Image 1 (cartoon, rainbow, N blue to C red):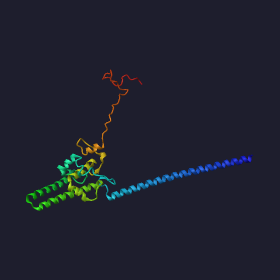
Image 2: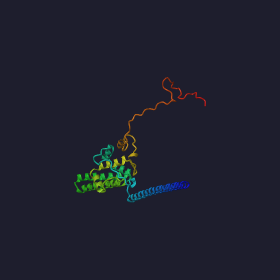
Image 3: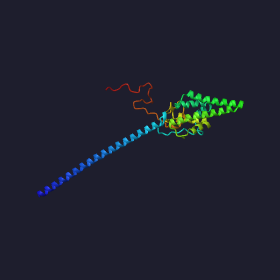
Image 4: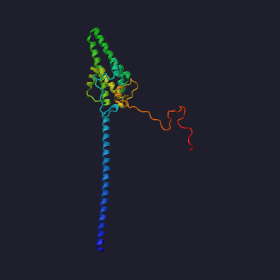
Length: 269
């Protein structure tokens, strides 16, 4: 009997030792698994960091985004050139009546030159075209007609070049051909100026920095880009109920208006 009891005790002791060893092995495996998980997460984060740094270096090397900080974000022109030219009537009126002033304002917003200098270049080109047409109508000399056509092409190339600069600076989606920009300014210059002005004003571009729609601030009813801003940020017309009087306030029924809100005879502490 004593031998059987001793054998049972030894068997139970061996079983407990095996269970303890298995538990220790499981804990070691769990620690190893956790360490491997942490190492894999750290490695993945390091790889993402390296890839982001490489992408940023590639963008800087390629010159993407320009002064506006476009990076890899693809932006678009605001509206169509012809169909949406009257979306902002103020801009349309400026582009139709005084395109030189509108062109100068666009260049100042995009930080591509002084408003006065750019407007003067545009104005001189328009004056050259007008003088050439008047001279041709009076003298009937073909040289003045050729001078007028040359001035038209010159102003189209000049404005198309700066339209291409705006596209590259702010990474605006469009064709890579500069000829399309020149053709737009040649065929419908006022509508093209309207599209450029809408894009710069609605997205609150200041001194070559693209702030985006969310940072647009409208002052008064004639603020720049106020129509698009109001369409994006519609105010809610939820009625707000005035707060009820608190318990410390006096009621209006039968109370003297000069009566203090808090009773004067406060209990002593």
